[in-house]
Image (cartoon, rainbow, N blue to C red):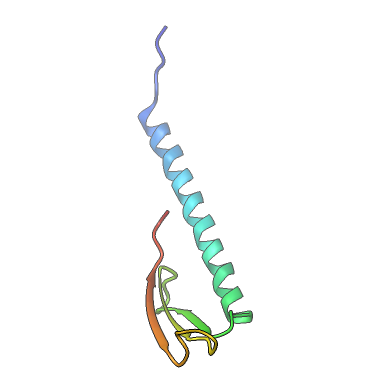
Length: 82
């Protein structure tokens, strides 16, 4: 018994699955950005760079009761595809 696979159908299915994963990722990133805007953790600021949700800048202020007190830590974050 042989199984014939239409390569065009397979490519289309894989393309649709990839589009779905990308849409889910974008939705998750949008929700998390909104959470950071609405109720950021104490001493933390984070925002997307430009229109992209793949690169963020952040600043963390050292907590007073730690060895990091008085410190200002600047970060650049890149969100991988997976």
